[in-house]
Amino acid sequence: MIHPVVWSGPFIPLSASLAAARVGTTTNDNAAAGQIGEFISSTVGATALVTDTVTNITSLALTAGDWDVVGSIQYAPAGTTTVTKLFAAISLVSATLPGVAQSETRLNLPFTTGQLQTVGTPTLRVSIAAPTTVYLVGFSSFAVATMNTLATFRARRVR
Image (cartoon, rainbow, N blue to C red):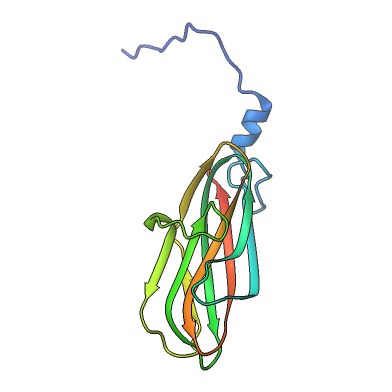
């Protein structure tokens, strides 16, 4: 015999605003601001670097919530530029490498002179109680000529 479960507590309806925030989207459009699945991004190009200097490549203004954030930086050295270090990181502090392996990728090796290189960051969970700016920062050690970057930075609200 199957025994039914009887709820004896009060019925608490899900508020319309809470229900809307949890729904996200059920089609191929974008989830609205504040909804699960909300997506924001920034794509930038032609950011000039100074050797051995941490640089903000782009940033995202996140509202309170739980976000997955990821970025990639394409390093574009001039034809004669020699490169020995390329870093890409997500930072909560402007123009600062976080020094946390979960939020950065560091490559320390000699690269082919003048060749494009793309360095991606790991996906980082950013859980915040107030609006916060997150930065995609880049760093390169190079000599002889110049280095520019192109980048994409993305965030999706997970809850």
